[in-house]
Image (cartoon, rainbow, N blue to C red; front, side, top):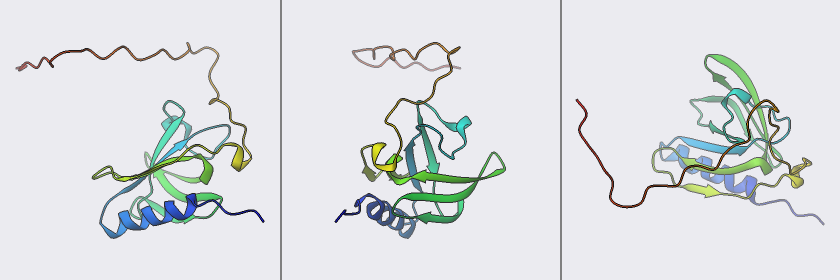
Length: 140
């Protein structure tokens, strides 16, 4: 007998906790393949979504998929995300929440990097952080 993942239950619980406390729940989703999300808001293969009851309609956190309708720059969109693609859920106000591993193969998707544009240069590593004491100055 195949057991159901605990991930959708934890997502529902943290979403409920955020809502009960008056916090704004956010999802971080790994965008792989052809997912039904607004691609213009995807950065570094991830999208951050406000899933509060004020920001979305018809929110359903099922065992396999999360679906809802939301407005992006005034345009209504239907969103459908595999639960396995959710990386984290957290409160915007205090950052509390829970992180998860990407489960690409569990939702029937290949575990590959996000599609890239061949005309785009490959991403570079971020520059090293400066060491030492921070330097601040007043700008008038």
